[in-house]
Image 1 (cartoon, one colour):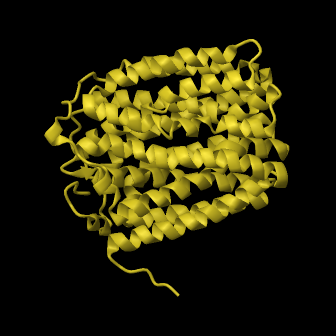
Image 2 (cartoon, helix red, strand yellow):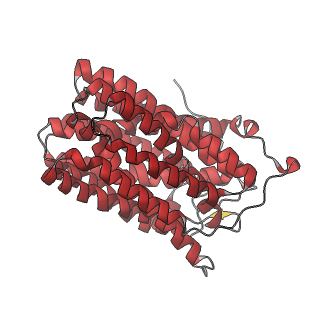
Image 3 (cartoon, one colour):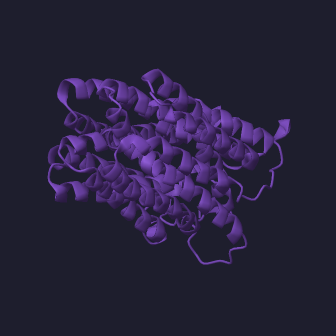
Length: 417
């Protein structure tokens, strides 16, 4: 169990998760969060892998595509924390989720403009993503609180809910790959509207039980938490870890397309990563207690470096590409659950929403913007493979930072020289 009132050394014990059986009194609430997760990631399942291919299909350059693809990360620089602050103050997380989903759905319909330009697409993406990027931090904060029992984070319950998001992603990444291969990329905007509509409807399944608004004397300051060495190094390691993954999120489809893979095969390779992700989420309660949370940070970062190196050097060989994608179980799924657990520990109670928002801003906002801009430069002068060589180096830096987190949690000084 992770005790929310404990000091950071609580992580030194391998039993960092509550995994024992217990009676679930909130099954319906968790089911509604599963529906939200499934619909949200169903949207991402086609949007993230195929946005760059659609932009290429309408005639935009790689440099422009890099900038537009980074819009999702750019909005994460400010939107999640603003929504997280608002939800912490008002307690109206569900109402805010419903509004965000409606606004995102209406704005996504504007992608179907007859002759979209780069400027028009950028405006639409900003409006749509400002609202959609707010949804996961708010729902993750609410769900993390729901699956915590007795001060501990229940990895089994969390994984069984979160895997529905992976299944939604898997469904659309395969279906969209087949569709776009058969009918072309012209229907991309329609896919956006339909999946956003499903997301909007799922928010109405959530229990609308407002939390008590935060009173002045109950407000929790964030800065003292961030000044803790273990928390600061955690966010640095998360930043570098996700920055390494941005090579996959933004450029993998383009890279595989340039290597001659069909859109159906590209979808299959994305699907492999999601299948192993689902398997991990379902069984993570068996594996995660074997090591401490910070040890898993080190493992995930080191495996990420291996994955990026394999992609850079051997993605042209299908077997190697498949093996690299299979490592997603560790590099994303294990890393994500560990981060959510650590955030629940360091940012309890009324700080939970802002902690999740900071995870999105620092972990997915800054890395996405940086990789979108730097990746465009790298691909222009050194080709798409260079992105994955650079991200391998970044992953090695993330491993070093994760080791620092491990040392701080275990109160063991790092050996230097």
